[in-house]
Length: 178
Image 1 (cartoon, helix red, strand yellow):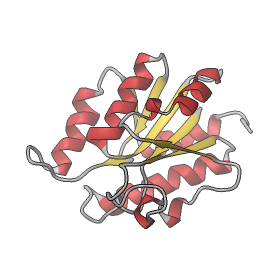
Image 2 (image 1 turned 60 degrees about the horizontal axis):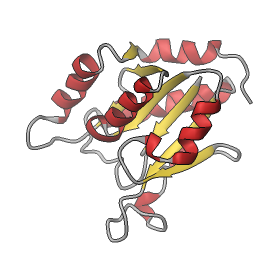
Image 3 (image 1 turned 90 degrees about the vertical axis):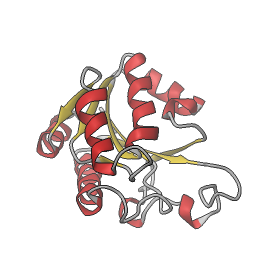
């Protein structure tokens, strides 16, 4: 299994996110559990281009301090919503024997959704723990409604939706991978 941590960047991790504190705490807990159990953690950062505040060299581009990658952990950069848009990451994941991806991070209705669907289409078993993806209010739905809509409806047949506790247990059952 690989824990894929998407867009947990300073410009995006904001108190306006749905269930902000619970979301960040749950995400940190899973990263810590993966590290403790020697499950590979891969970070992905979104680069929105110059002038956006979300590009390499910008403070907002950096991964939040609570999740700072450790030496040896892979970090990939993407420029489109799906993580599979990064050719190196796509090739790396394709080479893995274990086809389980636990996907967490931001934003539910953009990069998480695109990555979940892309992973499913490529034959990965996709695991999405409750409370580990979030988003902001938009013109059509509140953030809470958006998160519930994707987690409980859109991805219903694409993912293994598990509780946070189940996700931690799953990470504890993984054989050493590094």
